[in-house]
Amino acid sequence: QHERSGQGGLGGVGGTRQSPRSFALADTAKQYRGEKDGRIEDTAVRDRVLTIGMNQTALQLTQRRVMAENRSGDTMSFATSIFKYVSTNLTQQLTDLRTQMMGTQGVGWEGDSFEQTELDTTRGWLGSRAMTIYGGSNEIQLNIIAKRVLNLPD
Image 1 (cartoon, rainbow, N blue to C red):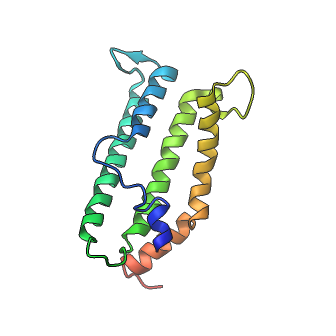
Image 2: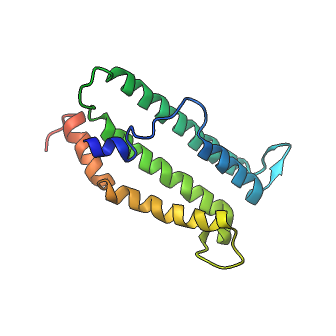
């Protein structure tokens, strides 16, 4: 339970403002997909960037609420399983979109034709896949949620 608090659980509880990763995602969209009147030109990409940003904010606000409810020093609730599951999936969505927006520049491993941010994007995209495994696979997290949070039968 406590490991989940740090791996996509409550370890990274932030403020209520939009995550710096969301701003970086919007900047990436403007750079690689175009900008018109200060906005991301591609409306489908703009929609995905905004959705990820709103989901990040919703997760952060919910995490803060749970932290406030648990100030009594009790063990964190099984909500951390839900946070881990949601957080890892959100990270995958973010890294998938960033990689897709960059096109072939988003899947480079080395070489002079890639900027460091593009190489970092590739590594982040691959690392986001590992997040669902090293802290307990998503299937295991869903099992924990079903049994311990929702009290569903085996």
